Image: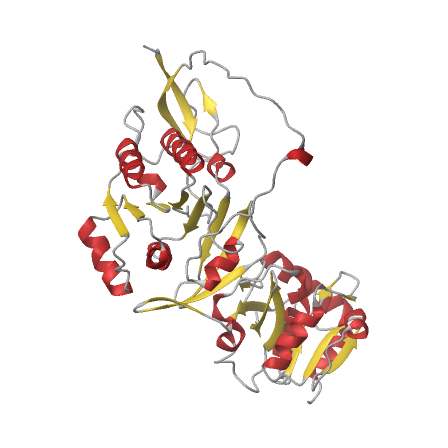
Length: 451
């Protein structure tokens, strides 16, 4: 029998130490090292393997498994791939289990094979109660309340499901390991054996993962390297809208997003998120600007709000939905290049609807909203804008301008302020007036003048 030895493993980064340390030398986390029993690995037989030329590998078209949720299938690259391992993460209460049950219901409605949902956090009765509320009552949708890894794999082997879902991976326990469920060794062991099961039997497997207070997926970082796809389910507290995005996808793009709205009967797909995000936009109010953002191949028109107020002491900065560092940078550009002094005042920025913007094309909208609030002059409600702003005050061209302009035309906007290179090369005209600008001063003059 293999001899056991004690070791201390960091639950954040996986660093291994022979003795306990208060602070992890790798990730600088405090009190993150936990004692685990490691079994010394014995020698294993190595089978004969031969390399093959890539040009000789026969390409086969993989039939993806459609979930019935178009927004989800878009993010996955067209649906679930048989034999793939997908990690679904999100904040507690965001709707991961709801999304998972709706996904499995859509597959079970058309699948001839069973679909297995393993719940390690709820009983069968609790899961059935939620399933009835969501309308997930397909006969081939089976539920198992179990946390023992061996029992889960045994039942999955017996049933041969087309899709296996584990909710959540942190509750699964391998009995041969002495560490507690959710520890690094337990999560790593469970993920490795589930990966082998998925590949050997071509079963699409979905793992639900918790998220830490910092917004990262709980468990070892190696878990994200093991799986084929990592999908995050995001949303701001108090908002019904949910954003689904992939941060890793071996079978598709990582630029696509799906938009859902949480309702009493479950998640509803949002076919036109731009109209939804702009439905409650205040007309004629200063500090509001509409930008044409791009998430993957999907254009989104969203409202950026800004409030500039007199500072009582040290100026405060707060930003929701955008990078606070980017906001600080643009405040300096406004002060130096446009002559609007906002550095000594409180500045608050918010993206309405709980959307998070990461692309630099939102710069022009941020500057417009801040300058509008500072000057107390509203932006024309029929005007949309986009463009990247540099430190010299120049407005730089962005990718896919025609997709953004087409979305603005569809929603009835009449004017767009955009970088001059994009305006000159654009093929979208219609009723939309294009105002090309080369610097921040010209952009603010076009945005804040009477419409």
